[in-house]
Amino acid sequence: MALVRWEPFKDLLSIHDRMNKLFEDTFFRDRGTEEGLVKGVWAPAVDIYETQNDIVLKAELPGLEQKDITVEVKDNTLTLKGERKFEKDVKEENYHRIERSYGAFQRVFTLPGTVQQDKVKAKFKDGVLEIVMPKEEKAKPKMIKVDVE
Figure (spheres, rainbow, N blue to C red):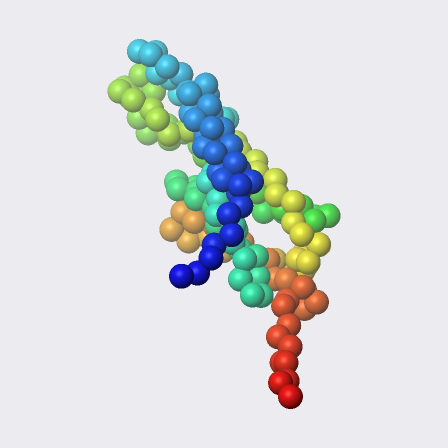
């Protein structure tokens, strides 16, 4: 049986994120029978993970096109900006319910100093933006062989 180290702060961060989402969903949407168009109060969900060579960020941006998205890397900061525009094909008064959020968004992430900022690449496919940030050589773990005598 493997021992697993308990990290209480990791659990607290998870609870903190869930509470923030709960408050955002509650207070930033109109309530009751007067449900209206919500503009400018949304941010795309992201996943950030690390591989041996890269740090990868994936953002969900359904309904957006590549021209609606801006990615900027400067001074160890990654800025993701964009806008989801409300489709004018249907008159607003003809809607029964509007639950998707519209308007501009901006997410800013602090990057570790180990990212090669000049080699960051982004691709957009099927509503998912993937940003690959290569790590510097010195940041990659090195395997050291141990000789047994």
